[in-house]
Image 1 (cartoon, rainbow, N blue to C red):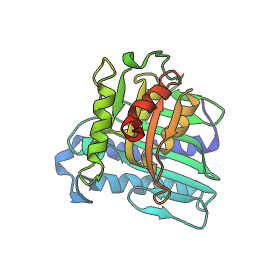
Image 2 (cartoon, rainbow, N blue to C red):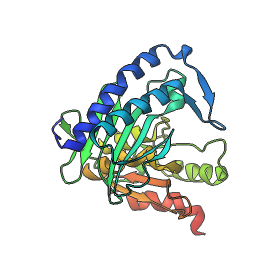
Image 3 (tube, one colour):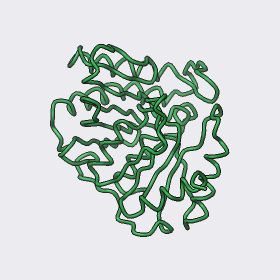
Image 4 (spheres, rainbow, N blue to C red):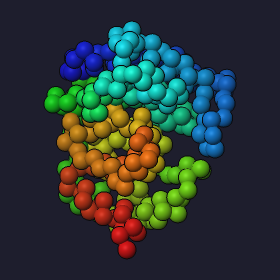
Length: 267
């Protein structure tokens, strides 16, 4: 990996240390203790242990930094200028069912701007990372978004609504509208962090999803931007600052895809 800043090194070390027991847990998935965290959303002992390891490593380097994380919420609220944004296992449902499509996602935010981030897929040993002004990388190789020109030829990915969602009909309507205007079926992989990472390296041409949490895509924001992509947080709810509706794509298809997604709301 060519990025070598202190923050990237700290995040990378935390990811590597947390990934070892995570890989072991994935190999023994049937032995995990699972507790319900809400309708359609589960947390495992692996989730909690991974987060604990990551937080310990980050706090060892910067004990005064704030932390926003999926399991523990906000830690050290007094420091609002420097924050780690953590999702210990993005794609928990995949993990629980033995599907090797999940990742550790850590972003570093300084004065309300993501400065660097890492998304690490421990099963495939793929580390996506980026730092503001220094580009985006997959392991040791520089990455860029695709150059697909026409939306109808694009390969897109999305995520479906949670069972608790109150806007399922809107989400399904958007899915149908987009699907009817492209040639390839829309994919759904179950990990927002990896979906954004895959757009960043050109595997997908675009991704959209409503009702994401900030920790799902914090690291992906900087990786996509540094890979030359466009990111759009549409229809933001100011009352829910940690929630996001996201559109991520290359510049060629961005506006047309956004219009398709929002078509039902323009009428």
